[in-house]
Image 1: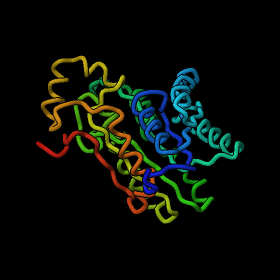
Image 2: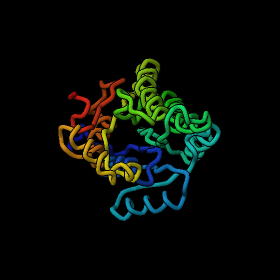
Image 3: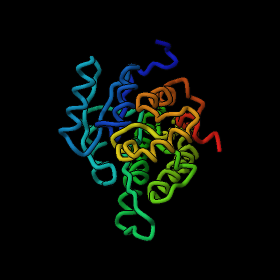
Length: 255
């Protein structure tokens, strides 16, 4: 393994990582030497995911907390402090989707999506950065955006706004934290074959639209996001800051 991409001796916290994209990120980082901390709100799902990694010989721990709850986030990092564990790499992956026309959207629904997808990245990123700055050794923060960080679609307004916010939050974090040897970047997945998109995958019309609209001619697989995450988590990206890398089969590159 090239030392440029090695994550040996590093600890990575991945939010929303009991399944889907988050689990793919965790597994990719673990395969390159990182100890991973899986996060979610369901301890049973987290333990199952952790076993899948430990059975392969990786070190995987769990930390259940609600990323949108400020006090829960603070308490989680205080727990890590008490354990003497430091987060060298943070992937802000936790997110939810809600499909509903804007005219039918309740304020509570709006806030639930924005808080889970965007505010959580601020809260968890803040606590991680405080400690990275205090240690003086730098670190890596990777926020997870979307194609909707650039383009809108009907009926997913709060998701679109939250992911557009992720792009600008990444730049805001860079403006304040890059001087502390912290690299903050984002990944924007295209249409990925995950449980979250199961309804779209099984819809022949939408499935056909994705395949015809994407130059690669197919949906992406969660594992195909791991390379970008490994790059952004490793020494290979030490002078990359404030960027968003789209892993979308070329969708944003064409009309």
